Length: 239
Image (cartoon, rainbow, N blue to C red; front, side, top):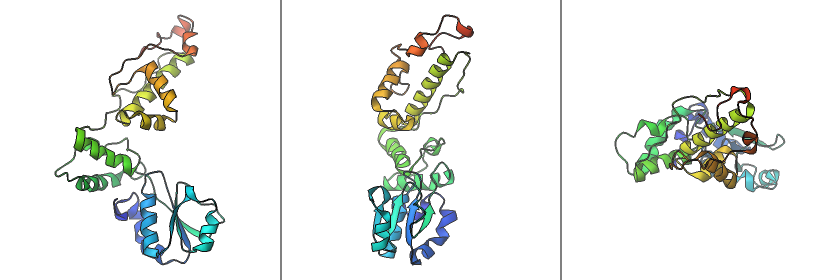
């Protein structure tokens, strides 16, 4: 894993690490998933000589700090206000994209890659977290893959009726999620906030641009009930 100096936002909070190590209070490190929260928490706990725990595994965080006043917790959310601890939030890569180039070089070095990397590996939209960024490097090394670009043209909502516009928006968001996930459907379902079953229904309805799967032509009930010529809307499925 990368050193704390490579984590997002280090220029803002890095100067205070030695002070945090020396403080008598407990520490609660939090931030978006994959921002390096657990990495930093483990590093600080080792330097403090105290336990490090994940917030999701603690039934009673107060009990941890009672037993280990200088303990360290890593979490996704800020701690409850009553806990006797200091708080440090680590921003995500989307908030601090300037951290991406150094992290890419770090992961490339871990994989033995030399020379410049394709610019697309560090291009926005940001991959979201360190694990996804490392996966970009791995895919480039093993498969020669770079991130699929988003559609070149913006979403067009030419219809006037709600059903047709919702259908077009659904297709746009599905295809964007699949491209950003390199076709990884589990990751795409997480990005969209739907179950895997729902994702497969959406793919059947709209197709998969990454794997080249065409739409099966299914339409939702709300669209099939649309009256012909309603509000001069285009035909279902028209782009």
